[in-house]
Image (cartoon, rainbow, N blue to C red; front, side, top):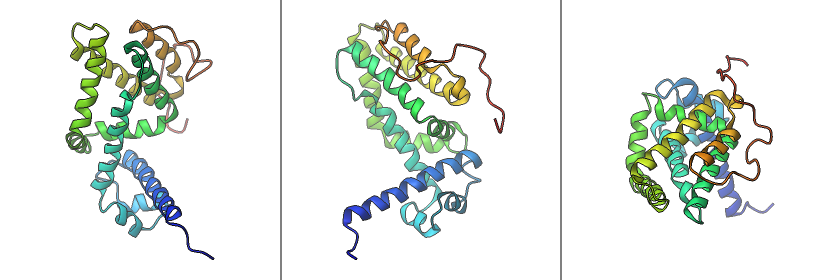
Length: 217
């Protein structure tokens, strides 16, 4: 039997890393950063303790990787082309589609960002990624300036606040949250053409009284 190729070995290592990161995200969300242990993550990932410590020698390294990945995904939203209106529409659609497709991950990552035990680590991650974060801010401000905004900096802050609020609500209320209707409302709010077709839900739920699901439901 021939030895595995270097590419196959690299794929196996990447799969192991992803399994560990996914397990760590779940455990940190459920138990909090300080109460979670490497043993908890080992059991959840189904790998040896030695493998975890080989890739991530400590809990903080795991959280750092998770938060760095979150910031990378956020700052990537500017990677679209077209006119200012086309770019803004693509950013809205890209963010909301990502939320719809990765809602459990978004919910767990949000808990790391806002929890008192891990928020300082998020602040450190923002500092590490300062160039990317500033690039996102400046890119959005340039976009709103190109659309004729009187205060592009304020528009950038408001735009991100609206999107982050949508992500928070979708994470809390899940299937009851009318994400497709919110998408269309965002297009209208920013004076963009109405979407020609559904992106997220062909038959979105009507806007009702949202309530968080009870445990076990």
